Structures are given as C-alpha cells and as structure tokens.
Length: 452
Image 1: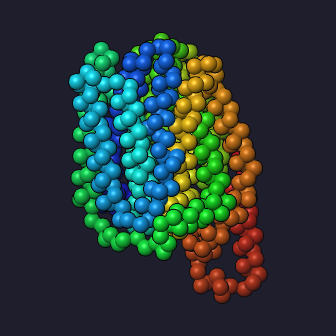
Image 2: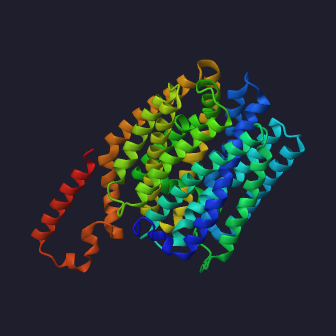
Image 3: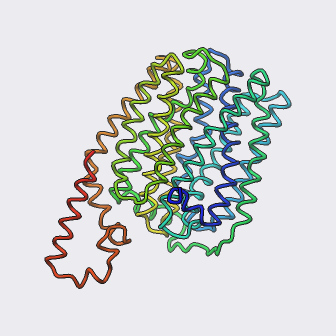
C-alpha cells in the first residue's frame, strides 16, 4: 500500500486528489442522468441517433481545440487556467439543473450546453495532465500519480452512475435535475483544493510564439516514433472501441430488459474493472515493460467488447464490462506514463494536448458513427465490429514494439531509468569489456520483457 499510494505524500497532489474525487462523482452522475434524459426526450425511434449526437457535440471540440490547449498549458501558469475551466464547468452544470427543474429542457439545450462543456473540458484535461508533474515535484512519482488519478476517475465511475441510478429510480425516471445540481456543487471541492495548494509557480518559458509554438509542438510530437505510435493506437481505440458507452442505455433497456438501475449497474461494472486496472498500475514500481501493457490492453478490450455485444443477461454483460474497464485503463495509464516520462518539460503541454486529442477528439466521431450504425445494423453488431478492429490494432502495435523500444531506450538511459545510467561516473571508468558485458545483459533483459 505504501508503494501504491506514494504520490499522496505530496501535499499538493493530495489536495487535488480529494477535491477531484468529489467532483468526478458528480460528473459521472451527470453523464448517466444525461443519457437517461436524452432517451426519455427522444423516444425509442431516434434514441440511438440522439445519444450519438449528444456525445458528438460534447466531445468534438477536443479534435480541433486540443492543440491550442497545449499551447495554453505551455505558455501560461496552469493553476489559474484550472480555476477558470473548473468554474465554467460548474456553471454549465447549474444551467442544466435549472432547465431540468423548470421542466423546459429540450434536446437542443443539451446539445448547446454539451458543446460548451466540450470546449472548456478540452483545455481543462490538457492543463490538468501537464499540471500533474508540478504537483508531485518531478518524474520520480509521476507514474504513480497518473495511475492514482486514473483510479480516482474510475472509482468515481463506480460510485457516480450507481448514485444517479438510485436518484432516477427514486424519482420515477424523471429526477435528472438533482443529478445536475449535485454535479455543480461538487466543483467547489476542486476550487478549494486548488486554492489551498502551496506552489512556487513560475511562468513557463516558450521560445516560439503564436502559430510557431503550435507547429513546434506538432513537429516534436509526430517526429518521435514512440509518441506517434502510442497516439495512433489511442486514437483508433477511441474511434471504434470507447463509443460503446454511448449505446449502454440501449443495451440496458432492449437487450437486458432493465431500467435506470440497470444502466447504473452497467456503468459501474466498467468502473470496477477500470479501478482494478488503475490500482494494478499504481502498484508498479517501474516504467519498464509498459509497452507490453499498451499492446495487451486493446486486445483484451476488443475481446470484452465482442462478449458484451452478444450478452443477453447481466451475468455475462457485467463481467465483460469489468474486463473492458480493466483493459482500457491499463492501456491508457501505460500510454500516459510513457509519454509523460519521455517528453521534454517545455513541450509537455503540447504533447499531452495531442494525447487528449487522440483520446477525446476521435471519440465523438466514433460515437456519431456508432449511433448511425446502430440504427441500421443494431447495437450488438456495432459494438462487436469495434471489438474486432481493436484486436487488429493491438496485433499491429505488437509487431512494432521492438522498434519502438529501440527509440525509447536511449531516453531511459539519459534520464537514469536504466541501471547503467544510474551508476553515472562509475560506468565511465569501467573497463571496456565490462561495459560490453553489461550491454549484453541489458539486451537479454529487454528481450525477456518483449515476450508475452
């Protein structure tokens, strides 16, 4: 447990962890209630389309604005930016609550406010990812902080939908406004946590300005084979795999013959698996071997998608969703950790913005496509097709893994992750034969790490 929770020793990260945990529970409550409300307003005929459309409008800003959010993260102090984004998201939740309580809410309100939230969230996600390093004070605990942050997200994913399901059930399926209101109030915890942090904030220094800043970050990101390959895999999984969440309500009502409580159970099952995956990643003590996790995660996720697609009972659907949650969390946490480890500090925000674009920006396109395909071919076929593509993408990445490791290894040597660099000057004085023996030993270790 000491290893698993070591990044909480940093006071600033501990404050963030507590505040963000409360806020994320509210976020998942709103997400679950939103899906139920859209289904109630649209009716059975257009349900899949409108669920896909709502997901599309709330996430599509990430595809276009993510690179700009990286420039903001690298050029401005990150805590003030988070003050602004968190406040705006709080106001969005209160607006939804007011419309729901007044009984005047319509789908176009949901689409408009969802697009607004998508714009703000794009900047918030990128800046928060870049801010992690500042909260833990360096790269030593960054992998653990990323994993714990992921566990927080998925712990809330377990609690939030379940609470929303209970509130909706208690209100006869028409109690969405209370979920929106509680989400708005939850942002107060984040703002208080940010205010209480003790940071020595220095304005980031970026040599280039304007458009050159953006292009510099793009060249740095896509000229690196490891970063490019990781981002491409994340984008594919986000495009064809994660849109299954958009169709959960359809599975809950049509395939499993349930109601809002069933929808809450399905979301919670995925959260349980993702929480287990995040805790598994938090218990790791080294970044070595994460490439295998990035390859194995999408393969397992795709298999889970296929099993879930054709499930007709909760006894099959819930375990499949738990496996999917575990797999996607392992892949995303491993990808985030490697990116945060190998990236240069002055380009961290821009690289993480492209990660956010791959993870969030392609999801709305997939959600809209999934909604359209589900209307024509049905939700089970759509989800199973996405699972098959995930498996193929995982196999292709596995074949590229040896070449990716060749590019990452010199970076690990330079920053002291591999043993020979940690020895420093002592290595420089070793006889040449000893150095050759050491290189051969490391080559054997790397070869063993590649085996799956």
